Image (cartoon, rainbow, N blue to C red; front, side, top):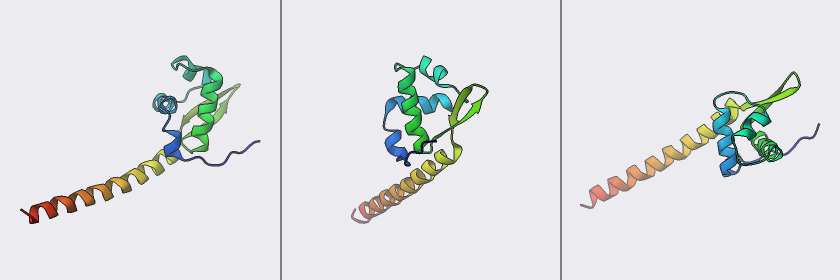
Length: 106
């Protein structure tokens, strides 16, 4: 089995096709062929995008008979959400400080 280094989830989601794949997988597990039918790229391209998303920890897969089904990895999305929540909290704190300073100067 080939292993790939972990990819940055933010960089993985920078691509519109990969975001579309994650959106579609949010509704439930799908095989590559099902995903490719709704996208303007080939099945091999979808497979490559899934590999990037998997390396970023955002997607996992499992074998079901002769098919491989892909689904959103809740742990990977939770980690991304936690990072975003931290950033958002810091941004709100900074904004609150600016508003307070402007209020004091009036």
